[in-house]
Image (cartoon, rainbow, N blue to C red):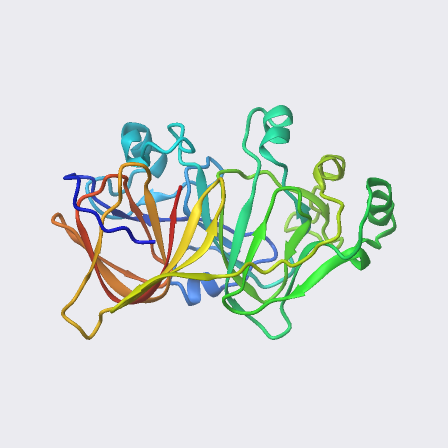
Amino acid sequence: MISISSNCSSNNAPFLLKPSGKDYLWGGNRLNEEFNKGIEMNPLAETWECSTHPDGPSYVATGKYKGESLIKVLKEHPEYLGTHPNTKGELPILIKLIDAKKDLSVQVHPDDEYAMKYENGQLGKTEIWYVLDATKEAKLIHGFNCDMNRKIVEQAIKKGTIEKYLYKVPVHKDDLFYIKSGTIHAIGAGTLIAEIQENSNLTYRLYDYNRIDKTGKRRELQIDKALDVINYKATNEVRQPIRVHKYKKGYSSELLCRCKYFEVHKEKINTENTKEMINFQTESNSFHVLLCIKGCGTLISKEEIIPFSKGDCIFVPANSMELKINGLAELLNVNC
């Protein structure tokens, strides 16, 4: 939710981010064609919009830190992260856009405890998927369609029959899925997704449809580790409810997710034809990240005006200066 505050005076200015791209073999071209990413990759499967992960950092695109990595900026200004215990001096989240032209591998992520013990102190990965678009035939995998155990799954992988045990869910625009660590899952072909996750790149693949990558080899699988961390219980309801949290003239907010790792709201701004603007100011406990998923607008501070449009991502430091938003847009608003 956009919080309105007048208790702090700060010079912590927001800035637009520039993502790193990934050319995974299952990707398409929609992130360049529809989101104007301008990244010379074909395919362009993912853009890491807000990231301090070394596998794909994002960079500052506006303001006094333009051209510098977000890693460097937050290292020099840890106060931008806020006082929330999740930060611990580092950005705890990673935000991506994902264009799945083909099916992703069947995979699972470890929890924090397993990752800390077996992956050199890294974080595990719990994530949410917000579906930006999907074809009529699009599906995703979310867990099993019946209770399983390690032996059955291991044998099914060896025999190539694992797909018959997977819970496949039709996907629609504006669906929301919570993917807890330990959940076997895969994004299906024809799906365009915004993903908010822990700051981790740990993925254990179990099955990849025997595909060949651009080097002519099958992609590596991590079956033993995957079997260690999988939740073998059958899946129940997977879509998450979206709750209207706040509404006033020109603005509404829907709570998408509140968990131990992050909080996500969908903000709708409609002030394009009025003189009113939406006041916005972060508090001292957390940064906010605004990802525009539809429309366009402007974020106005005393230092500069930042125009934004579909696909743009803005980092707003904790304890920010007073800001105003104007436009006709939908934003995902992420904080601790």
